[in-house]
Image (cartoon, rainbow, N blue to C red; front, side, top):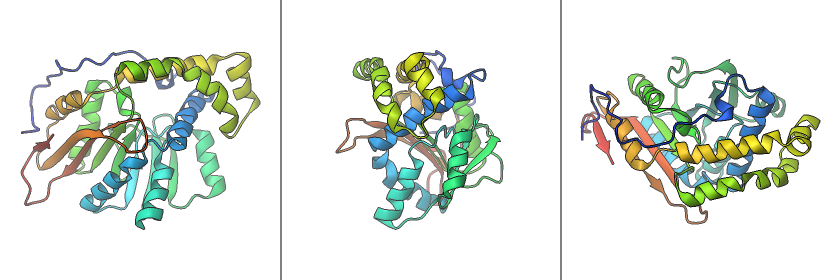
Length: 282
């Protein structure tokens, strides 16, 4: 199936187009950082993305790279955990460069203070649709692709194609009734998990318990994240609107054995000389 289409056609994409607080430039960094830290705590505590470590390893081997350029990193997401899994279980060593439109200054400071090996978080704002030339490696997006409306999502994929970079998108959010109902209970999780998320500050305690702004913002963002998520068919439709030659795509779902969360993925990589041109492997 050809991945090149001169005319953009997104008629089949039914996701809800509503805002999330953490996307807004006017949101104070305290609130944005804490919302992303909650997400980071949850995905690592429950090892939600651990099942995709093998896919990342295979894609990096195929692309011949040993560095991950993470886009829309927020508070770091699952990458430190995945890096450790690859090192401990597969003896596969990778370096990680985290980037974001709104870099998390608290995470940057902690990484600098602890001196985590082979991990860097850039303090410059990085646009996922236009990654600087000096950032070479596998581009990843975890729990962030749904933040992009279709036109921006296509630009992110198109940028990877034009730079001949491999790209991997992973999302555990889904437009399913049970996921949405679970999101409505998220403020309770925030109240219980906050004391476990370091660093703990008086500001976070104030805006979590005395004036529960953070739990309410997280409730909204969590619910809307599920409603904005792309289905497998919608990801396929996005791919068909990317102008790609000598580039392969894979779209599907990972069903973990030990966790309840399925993971939707979109993977793209430059084709080798012996492979078909502009292939969509759905």
